[in-house]
Image (cartoon, rainbow, N blue to C red; front, top):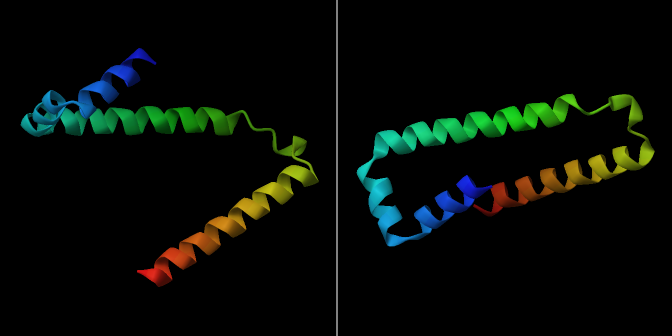
Length: 80
């Protein structure tokens, strides 16, 4: 949590913008590391889901979310 706050402050400051622009290799490595860690967190969450415990209420919410996502994607695609 402290690392997230520190990187947010660094990225929001003028010194942070200079730091980011001056070190593209560092930013590339940092981007890779954050993508890897986020992927690992999402895999960990996904592996803990018990599909048998999903009942009709959850599946209806998932279907509504999927429909909304598809409609918003189509709307965005057609408006550009």
